[in-house]
Image 1: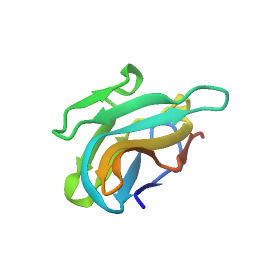
Image 2: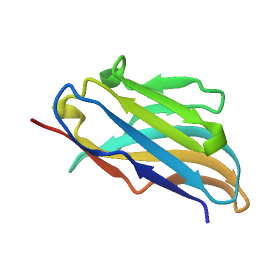
Image 3: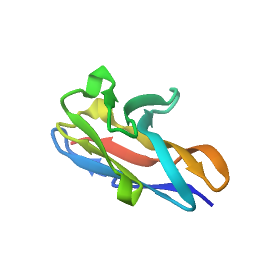
Image 4: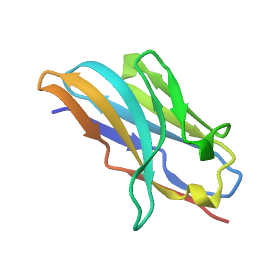
Length: 119
């Protein structure tokens, strides 16, 4: 069974940093685009950043210059380094990946990890 497992969320003060990780496991042949999304209560899940298989990146305007997405293909893992965090970054962050596995082409979501920015 292919799955995504996230880690790295938590409580941080404004201006602080966190690093999120999302590891894919299972019978994986290839991973295409990987991304991070976030959702607050009552709102839809929005894209934060994504990275292609050739490491082309894109970011939502509100995090440009503060967040960095990266990936380690050998570990089937995507990271989100979040610096200069603001209270408005508080959300549940979920990773997403487009995966080719022994079960075919899959679009998977992680379970989500809470990020809270508060003093």
